[in-house]
Amino acid sequence: MATVTHPEALRRINRLERIWEERSGVLGWLTTTDHKRIGILYLFTSLLFFAAGGTEALLVRTQLITPNGSTLGPAAFNTTMTMHGVTMIFLFVIPISTGAFGNYLLPLMIGARDMAFPRLNAFSYWVFLGSGLFMYVGVVTGHGPNAGWFDYVPLASRTYNPGSAIDFYALGLIFNSISSTAAAINFIVTIFKLRAPGMSLNRMPLFCYAFLAVSFALVFALPALSIDCVFLELDRRLGFNFFNVGHGGNVLLWQHLFWIFGHPEVYIIILPAFGIATSIIPTFTRRRMVAFPMVALAEILVAFIGFGVWAHHMFAVGLSTITTVYFAAASMIVVIPSAIQLFAWLTTLVTGRPSFKTPLLWIIGFIVFFIIGGLSGIMFAAIPFDQQLTDTYFVVAHFHFIIFGAAVFPLLGGLYYWFPKVTGRMYHEGLGQASFWITFLGSALTFFPMHIVGLLGMPRRVYTYPANVGWHPYNLSETIGSYILAAGLVLLVVNLVWSYFRGVAAGPDPFGGATLEWSIPSPPPDYNFAVIPTISSAYPMWDPEDREHDVHKLNRGEMVLEQGHETPASTVLDGYFDEVLDMPSNSPWPVITALMITGVFAMILTGHLVAMSVFLALVAASLVGWHSVEPQEA
Ligand code: HEM
Ligand SMILES: [Cu+2]
Image (cartoon, rainbow, N blue to C red):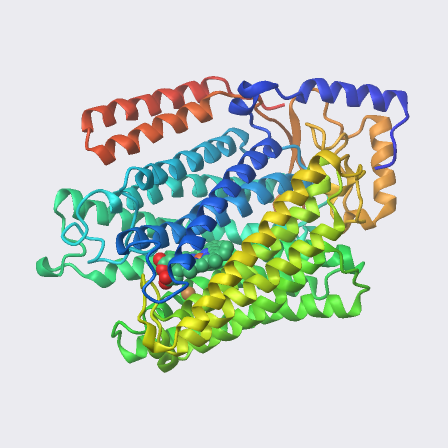
């Protein structure tokens, strides 16, 4: 929006500033319901967990650098390897993509002043933090989960795994899924109801489609994991027999439920990356995404088909042929929407005028790794191939190309891309490009040789290997690669920290971005938009007349909504103006409720059932407090 000079407009902006002003200090952060602040809390917390998960990866790699290594013993290896997987998936990728990127950017991209349920949003952050700390308490007290991130029974049953390591896993993940479910519901309602009037579904940025798909996938996938963990706890603590073959239970039940969650999970991890790619590519090629409706549909379809392929993780367990063949075919079908998106990104790049700045470089790296990981993925859909290579390092290679190369690279590119928006300063371009190349080469050196050593028969999850099997050179390269990769990531952090203090001022729109977050100052004001923006396409910043129209609306006082903490709601499909919503502001209840829930889980874990009931009562009391002050409909 152009510079505001009209005196009436300035008066309105001042008023908005007063109404939306955030409380300062620690108390302000504890009670905030502002999606931007919650996004930042998510960002820092998930980056800390990334550092923990990364350290664990380096420990595992250091243990495997030579045959008969002795950095970690077998028990420590199991915990480190398991916590690496659990941390990366549940405490890093999902929270950073939905919690940090989604929270910060979604309301800005759709022209809203906050998420639909600001207090639920704060609650999901505090529950996420609580669940992460909960699991890490297990690690530091010597009870870290140790049966692999998919925690197969009977290894995870009480008979073979006494002690509380697995209870930290099962309860921790049930706890964690409360957070993700709350966040997902919040995203769905926000996307459906809070788009600026005029933003009909077909004018919604592709980033938002990706988050819509992720949110639905989370809502439908997480219950399978939670119930699996509930069954496991019942077996372990109360002597039930869901997974106990001796008493008519079935160990494959664990695997089915786990992968009914686990495969959609892969798309939950990768779709935000697709969303980020479809934001960065148009900006740096000066071109709207080719095949916009196809890409939007493909994002939704990927999430949908992802629910029908879970048994490809179980080709080696002896399911009937008809079942395995069905799942192999379904797995191949997922390739179609993935390829649609791939061709759309490539065509946009080739037909646009690409400028290879740091954010776009990460997206190029992402595309390269997505192709490699996708190709090894299709190989696994072929049943005999899978039966040969399942549980070897080939799998580890495949899924790291996808979850690290393809899912995390766009997140890192996104950190650079939106850094100027969030901080108001530019990152250092030269260092940014260097950090990309170092990370890219390090990743290739780490993960590519895993294919070969996998083909040579090295199993995954072994804490050591003998000298005479020919695996050593590959393992050496992988470990050296992982240090180089880590150096690239450290350089990224150094760049961003340095730029935060020393970077040049960025202005509202340093890249000529297409979506609405670039229409407002950097960093964004507490109220986001001085006037609810006018929308006539999915690339609103490239519609200059609309932005001029916003200035006139502000001067006239139209759609400024300065009577209270207000944001407009619109109809689901057409985005017609519906009503004005009064939003809650700071509230202590989300953090208090989350704290009480942490108490409940801690007491279940330690078996103090009376104390647990007290905490449950306190949860109920906090909810009463929460709802005692409701915002009024305006
Ligand atoms: C940052 C660089 C990374 C390195 C060097 C790395 C390295 C490794 C290694 C060496 C293993 C153990 C394989 C085994 O012994 O079987 C492993 C497993 C795993 N990694 Fe990573 N990884 C990295 C990033 C990630 C990311 C970003 C994710 C997820 C988003 C991830 C998810 C996993 C999972 C799920 C496992 C399987 C754990 C299990 O078998 O239970 N990794 N990784
Ligand atoms: Cu799968």
